[in-house]
Image (cartoon, rainbow, N blue to C red):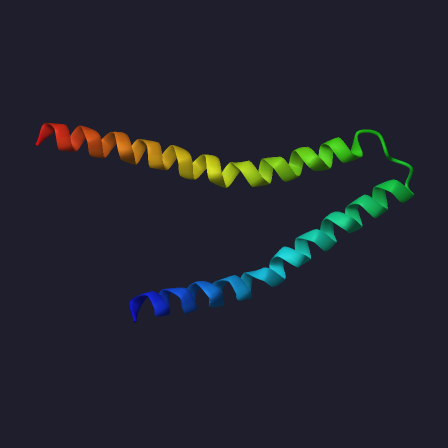
Length: 81
């Protein structure tokens, strides 16, 4: 019963956040169309790709650092006991 509630909660959260993901794609497309129509095509794709990678990597890196610190702290606590 508990897993069913967790699954339903996760599904509801996912469905509520999916609309904001589509909004971000439209914003990127609008920025690209504006820059290309103004004639600014230099380094546009590489800059956009770098921004996407930065936004993709940052949360995972933060979780990895917190997990590593937590792991080291728990190992230190278990050795002291």
